[in-house]
Amino acid sequence: LIPIILLIILCPAAIHALLPVPHPIALISGVILLGVIPALIVAFIIFIIGAMGIIHMIKTGEFIKAFAFGEIIDRIKSIGLGMYLAWLIVMFGLSIIISSLSRVHWIVSSIIEVFYLVFLARSAHYIYGL
Image (tube, rainbow, N blue to C red; front, top):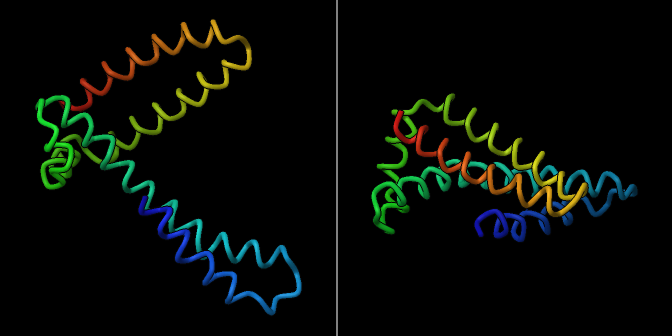
């Protein structure tokens, strides 16, 4: 929601700032620089905290713990930011690879996705316990 709000606020400002530009490519690049990039940065930060928030909620058994930002940030610090980011990147890469298998056949993709989800849950349990 916050990245969408940033896009709504910043994209018209970028378009207005670049209106006298005669080339539409320059206009598009200005919109990307002033609107999309900040929204992606905010979305990435929300993703980092949100993923650990979901794991923290499941491990504690309380819904409200998904929003305990102090506890979540402390947990990320105890794991180590580098290891946690590496885990997120590996899981994201695996999900892209597995989702691309749906082009081969939907049955193959469905079977592999079940194993991936089990692996994802087990690795989330492991990373939370570090």
